[in-house]
Length: 359
Figure 1 (cartoon, rainbow, N blue to C red):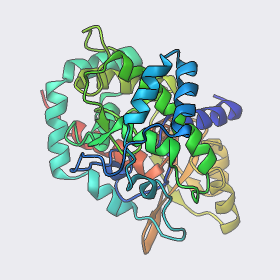
Figure 2: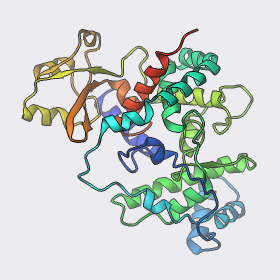
Figure 3: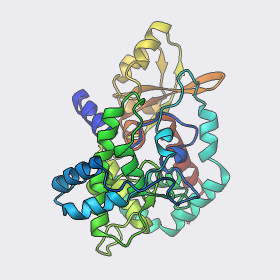
Figure 4: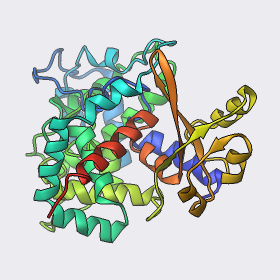
């Protein structure tokens, strides 16, 4: 994968998922799954507003749906007052804390739940690994971080959430126009699913992510698979479909079988070189030789993988930062959620569960 391909992949991923919408947060589940105990609408129905009709007609034409039906669905959607506030980015200047973030996910109860999930679905996990080349521990890590193995699927009506974000996205968001267009596109993909399966309980995150893997509607359309063979794709109720769909997603974004996600490193880097190495962020951009020449010491095992690498920085609040060398596969994990903290939590949880697996 060359530099241009990576940039295109990065852009595609930002449009495919909500991952990069609000940046780093203390809890990835809070950012995507957004569990809400009170599932009742918190505002009025959108009704027959002119902008509702215009959006409905546009989406109906775009997705070959009946205009009258789409108008009816959007008219019945409810504005949810809390959502515009939830999608605003965090205040600038706030130091992140990898240790605190890690401890929310790589903890005994979630590991135990992951172990039970692996035992119950070991055949599906083995089949997904064989078919797509994505390790079972990565799949287990994703589903565990996203929804605590199906425990936290989100309680917002997807129609309400996506309509709110399509018509009332906060104007003071720094990327308001781009994000509004993104959610309108997601609303269109969701309406296709709603038309196909009207009797499903379509609930999920405040951002519109759905099911065990918290796929956005466009990701459902592009990457979800019928992995349990029952003739339909159901990420809301089928963990086996979720397993196959996560593996399908990673393969589509370039997962390389056998490549580690990252290496532990030691640093003896000048301030100037550190600025250079951190400039690409999580995009792998440096050869092994370049890293070593600038004072990044990698383990001998890294010699099998000459690059490219990214120097990944993890802030630890007031404590010193942590660093790892991320590979192309680390970058692929961040296509699910555009955050190195998220990727490390997924990888760490999956490894912790794998370490407990015994047959």
